[in-house]
Every structure is written in C-alpha cells, then in structure tokens.
Picture 1 (cartoon, rainbow, N blue to C red):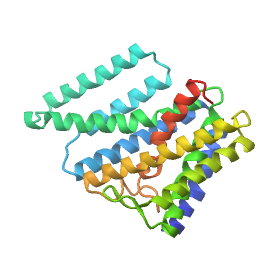
Picture 2 (tube, helix red, strand yellow):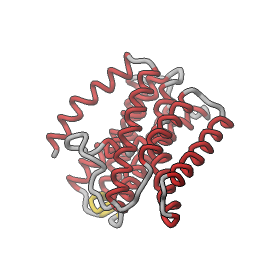
Picture 3 (tube, helix red, strand yellow):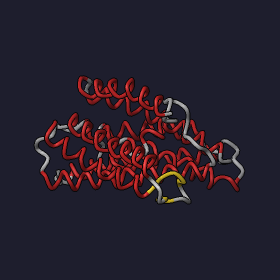
Picture 4 (cartoon, rainbow, N blue to C red):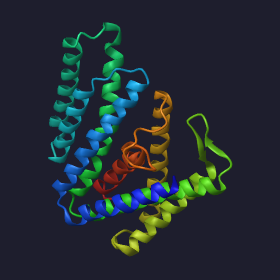
Length: 267
C-alpha cells in the first residue's frame, strides 16, 4: 500500500506541478473540469452503491456548467440564475423520467448534494489560479494541504492510539490529527521562505492552522459520506489512494478557505 502511494505520487505530482507552472489559468480550469467530471462520477457511483438513484448525467452536465460560469467570473445574479436553472432542469428530468413521486425528493436531493459537494467546492482552485498570484496560491494550497494529509497518515499509523472520531472513521487518531496540524503549519512556514515571501509570519501560522483543520474536516466529511453509502473507497483510479475524491477530499474544504482569505485581503 505504501509503495503504491509513493509511486502514484511520484508520477502524478510532478505532472501536476508542471501544468501549474507552465500552463495557463485556462489549462488549469480544464484539469479542474476533468476532475469535477470524475469526482461526480465517483460520487454518484457511491450513491448508487448505497441504494440511491441520482440523475448522474444531469448532475455531471450541470457541474461543468456551474464551474465554467464561476471561472468566467459571473456576478452573483448570474450564478443565482444558473443555480435556479439547475434546479428547474433537475425537476424536469425527474418529471419526464417517470420517477416515482415518493422518490422525487431523495433523487433530487442526492443529485444536488453531489453537485454542490464536488463541483461547487472543487471549483475554488480554478478561481485561485485565475488570480494575479494564481500559481503561488495553488502551490501553497497543495503544499500545505497535502503536507497535513501526509503527516496525519504517517504519524497516525505509527504512534496513533486514541481514536479521533470512531463512528465516522475507525482509523483516524488524535495523535495523527495533531501530527497533521504540525505538518501543515511547518509547510506554511516553509512556503513563506521558499516561494511566497509576501506571506506574513502571523498569517503563515494562522493559515497553516486553518487549512490544516479544514483539510481534516474535509477528510472526515468524506469518510462520513462513504460510511453512509457503505463503501470503502470512492473508486480505484489512483493506485494506493483509491478514487479521485479520496485524494482531493481535503482540498475540497481548504480551497474555499484560501480563496476567501485572499479575496478578503487577509493574506
């Protein structure tokens, strides 16, 4: 398992970094769009395994459309209009699809949950990349988030004893959580001296803690969803890691946090 994780990271991480460094914001958006499609496919696949019946084609199509509108910088009234259109389209799909009236709410709800969880949250890295310091923000986001993930995994698997949230994830430990937070803060400090000199010292610590906490919350939320659906992994796309959502579950929650922090001028 460890060897597969390392080999997968050795292949995929350099390719990702090269795309961020030498690709344009639109190239990165295309990557995010592909990730959204794969993520929605995995989410709706889990939902089906759990006995739900989402409208996967409509959800995936609307996910791409919503992400594109956000990337274009559509103002709030347009985004609200798009979301309204998504709901109308979803209801029409349920109507013409001959859905049992007793299943309308559950099918519509699970479709919308996947849409907002995957497409909504995963769109924020594309928004960050489109900013003036987009490359720096993406490098920082990935570096701090995955440092926390890696620290939590290895500290927890080595010395972890006290369970963090056994009802959701029987393997995550308090020791692993603390180790992950330390790694996130250290990674944030390294980023300040390595490639983001404009990041203040206090901001570096606060953002490291903030992203570290939210990354772990994102991980636990995905574990909660998988337990609810009765599956172990979201897929088998990445050897040693599982599905795409297993790899980006933390980024789903850290991306919006960093975007809001940048937008508000906190960093």
